[in-house]
Structures are given as C-alpha cells and as structure tokens.
Image (cartoon, rainbow, N blue to C red):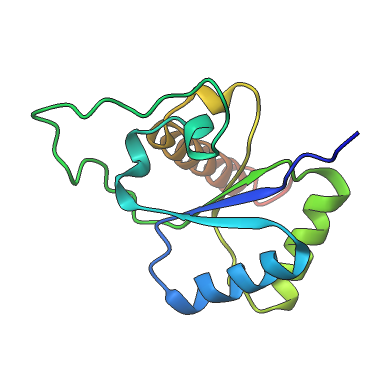
Length: 140
C-alpha cells in the first residue's frame, strides 16, 4: 500500500527567514511544503490541499478582496501524525524555526471548512486554552 503524501500548508508567514528554515526542514524530511497566498482564506482546506471533490470558492462581487485579516502564521499538516508529527516538530526546533502558534492537523471534518473558519477556530481554542491555564494557576 502506497503511503499518502505528507504536506504542509503555510499561511501568513511574514518573516522570510522563518519560512525558508521551515521549507528547508520539510524538504529534508520529504514533506511537500506549499505557501498559500493571502486570498486563500475563502477556500476549503480540502481544495487547498488538492484533494478531489473540492471546487474553488466562487468569486463574489462586493466581497472585500482583503477580506480576512489574520495576523499570525498558520501551519496545516496533512498525513503527518503520531511519531512522525513528533519527528517533524523536533526537526523544526533543531533547525531554529521559531514556534508557530497556530498549527492544525487535517481531519475528515476540517477539510470541508474554509481556511478562514479553521483559523478562527484555532484562535478561539488557543484563547480558551490560554485562559484555562491562567485560571488554574498554570496547572494542567
């Protein structure tokens, strides 16, 4: 059985140095790394990954082309989990890639979400987890 291709999607990476380090790590690990343009926020995650059954989002008149302002870097991992995920994250750290706050692993559910929804969900979850850590004194 052929192993599914591992992919990483990068969104909103403003620091070229960080992006170059990340791309170098992924290349060494044999992981396809793709940088998404800013306007990708309206597309479904499955479409951005090139999965079958997804069509591009319609270009809606009257929608602000700037659309969605998400100031943080986002990393989306596809077919990378378990020990392999640990290996990828350790390689990033060893290569000096700064921590990326918003990381998501692709699931059968979030492939149908727009990138905007995925980003907003991660932001809410991060805020919830951060507040939870503060309220219990940092004990988990």
